[in-house]
Length: 512
Image (tube, rainbow, N blue to C red; front, side, top):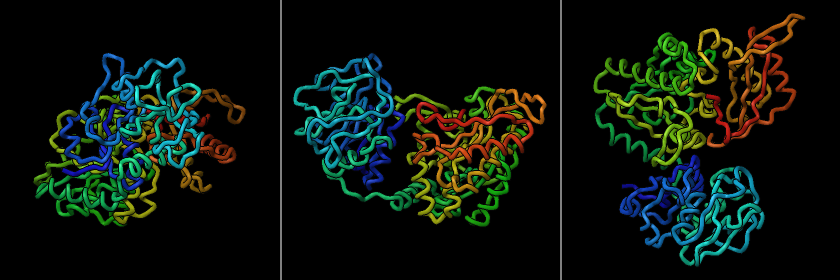
C-alpha cells in the first residue's frame, strides 16, 4: 500500500481536493480518505499529519459527520478546516452555533498572537470564507490565533498537542497566504519533505496501469481536449500494445473540431485513431430534451453504448480509459458520501450504472493545471496542452433549451468569432476558458431600420488556475465591443450579445 505524508479526511467540501493539490505544489504527497475511514486504514498510510476538510453539515445536527476519534490519540499534528474546525471544537468541549452573520467570500483576519501555523505571514490578511456556523466558545487548552469582525474565533490551536483549527479555507487561491499556512503545517509542524512531483506521478501511474491491465486491452475515449489526450499519451507510454484509441464525433463539437482531433493524434502524437461519426444518433436522442441533467445522462449513456459496440470488434477489451478530472468528480458525486452533487458530468454521474467495461481514470484525483504539467512531462506540445477546456457533452450544455442542428450552427458561428477575436488580441492565452452560450430567449432589435426578434448569446470568459474556483475575465471594452459587433453582424439569427460577470462560486463555469 502506498504511504502518504498527509491524510485528508473528506467531510464533503467542494474544495477538499484543493487541499491535496496545494500540498502537492509544495512537493508533499497528500491523499484523500472518506471522513469515516477506519483508523487502521489511516495508520496503514503512515501519515505525518492529518487534515479534516470542510463540509456542508453542522456538527450539532442529527446528520453530522464524525471521524474515528482514534485519530486524536495517534500523536500526529491535526489541522481542521471549516467543518473540521467545528468538529475539533465539538470534540474537545467547545461550542458551535449557527452564525448570526454568515460569511461567504473574502474576509480579513487579524492575528491575535504568534503561531507556527501563521509563521512568516502578516498580522492582517485576506482569506476566503464559506460558512453558516461558528465557534462560540473555545475548548479548554486551546488559544485564539486569529479573528474577523464576524468571527471571534476564526483560528485557534492547542499547540502543545499540535491541533490547529481554521474557519477559513487556506486551500482556495483567494486566501492570500493560504499556501504559506499549509506549507507551515506540512513542513514545519508535520516535518514533511518535498519528494512528490509530476514525474513521480507519471511513473507511479504507468506502473499501476501495467500491473492492472496485464494482457487485456484498453479502449481509450478521446475528444481532442487536453484531458483525454494526456490520458492517451500516458497509456501509450505504459501499455502501447494494449491500447485502442477511439474518437466519437457526437455532432456537438465546435467548427472543424473533428478534423483537428484526427490530425492531432496522427501527426503530433503518433497514435492510431479510430474515428466514429455518431452525430445522428446523439441529436436524435437529444431531440426535445431541455433539462441539463437529462442531456448529460443521455450523452454519457450514448457514449458508452458506442464504445461497447466498438469493443466487440476487438479481442479482450476489458477496460475503458477516459480523462476524468477531480473537478468532474466533485461536482458529479461525493468522494465520501458527504458532498453535494452540483451537476452530473457525462463521464461521471452521466455514465450508466451497468457497463461492460472497468474504468481506468488516471487523472481522477488531479486538476487541470496538473494535467497540463503532466502533458508537458509526457512530451505533448504546448499548443495542445494549453488549449482551453471543452466539455465532453460539447455544445449541448452551451445551448439553453433544446439542441437542434439550426441552434448548433448559430452557436458554432458565434464561437468562431469569439475565439478569433481573443487570439488576434492576445487574450486567448491570458484566460482560462472562453465560450458562447446560446440563450433560450429572443429579444427585439433594429437592423437596417427593420425590427428583429432574434436570439441572444452570452459570452463567458473566465480566469482560473484549476477550475474549482473562477472569476470573470476583465476584458477591455474595445475587445468586448468587437466581439459583440462581429457576432451580431456575421451570425444571422443573433441580435444581442451579453457578457457574464458571475464568478464560481456561486455560479459554475458552464451554464448547464
